[in-house]
Length: 531
Image 1 (spheres, rainbow, N blue to C red):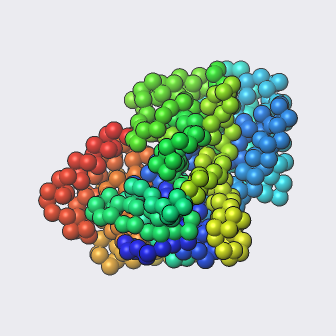
Image 2: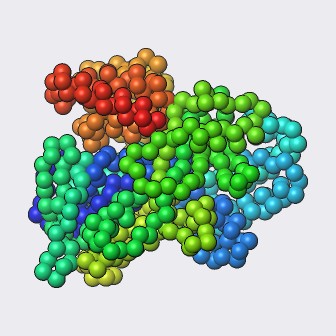
Image 3: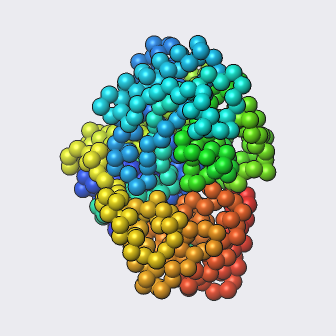
């Protein structure tokens, strides 16, 4: 992993979430010289705390139709096109997902069926599956825990699902193939300006070694998600803030609550929100809340938010969940474009906006994972059309297979069959690494370690080594939370694995006993606080 810096770049991207990683890939694949800076780990903020869905936005379509709002209609249509591209280009990290919407009266059945039919129709040739009516008998076989009293049946449709933190990593790794310099744990501390007060340099610090650096750039891009306004204020203290921040929590429970790999959408709670209940890496994921908030570096899911989700979910199921059933939980901040004064956060369309300050700092605000690629393309096109970059051609990302998705998955499955490892480990390797799963096993062979980090889990110690050498892991939480997603699945099992992960990392990174103790304490504290 390159830790050195050139004197100047075509583009410096600040922020290693969905949009920042997408911009780094779009720009580098066109031939621009790119530096990506992230102050923590890649996707350590909102981009790893999503609902794991790739979607067009069913509720935005409803508003578009009821209010005859073409702008919302266009956003849904664009997102559906991007959903198709996402699934194709990151096939090892994403899949189509059947979603059932339970219905409890016949009028609602017709209303929902018509709306979801229109949702499918909008995707045209980019459709990923047919809608259907699911009768009560079949629905209760698929979802045996669902409340049966007054149940009419369900309407099923398809959207996409993905592993968000691994997706950000795949974007970074693909950008590296195109010679982008991508650095996590490098925090921008200030900007420098020329005599005409135009921004021309970025000053930043390595948060691991405390080394300071300065690089020049033709374009400096602020793609820092929920932190966008804070960086804009660093550049100009008089700017008007553009974001309305909203917090969303998710909880994870045992797979037995949702035994089949089909999701449930509760279309409208009593206070008008949507709740998803999704299969997620052999667990069940439930989300999400939507509450106004302010920027905080480390958010956690409050007990009241968990109770809110449980109370609404329990209205639709005969089996009742309690706080004790929660294996993990998290809270993320959604960076929404500020609404008009008469709107609240639930009513804001998750559109994005490109802004340029007087100094020339270019910021991209808002957006969502589904449309990250299109947002990235528009941002680079903006730099070209405004003469900040020479024109090196159109975006290449629409047909660009991401790192890990280059080889057909069946080929990798066949190669894995020659290794003496459990079927659960093979399944996990395919889900996390795609066609790079064989590279992980090459590391296991080289270091002669096919041991697991825990007898109850499918992850190899070799994955820790691989993640340090090829996946930018600097801290144990990087591996446990964002490389194997264990923190998002089971808090207690994550805590039980901290020591062994630190021991493996200490060998590769040459930590002494004091450093090991420090890393164990800090990692356990983070997991206890955040999940």
